[in-house]
Image (cartoon, rainbow, N blue to C red):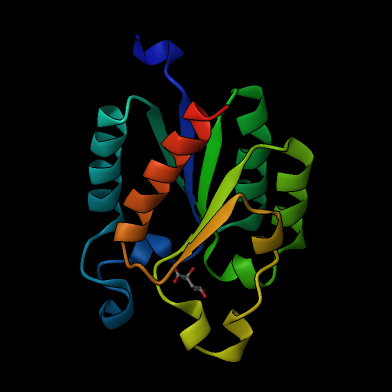
Length: 152
Ligand code: DQA
């Protein structure tokens, strides 16, 4: 299979996730986003799909990226929406409009943190959620993406 007809997975990281590596390392670890994206891109190759990585601190850019995923025939989206998890009806509506299966991931266990982190506008419409597995959760999400693609 050539890379052009490989299944496509889009990874979206939301606000402040460009700061992992230096941001609250006791919660988010010491690996940078660039390092994480490199590791995941390598893993995706082994799993035989093409991974595109996108990060933005801007809600509208994330919404546009989700809308464009439809036109780009993306098979699965993995998203860590950061703080927008707890606030964004716009990101929820974008997922509802494109109907692309998505996996919601959080590095930290949001349920062991402040109460305002316990609610997600996305979880009930996600294919699945991964919470509190640290950066390994992203790798788990890749396996799940492969599983979603292969069971279609
Ligand atoms: C987070 C949890 C959110 O509550 C927080 O706003 C983040 C990161 C996580 O990965 O644990 O920015 O999504």
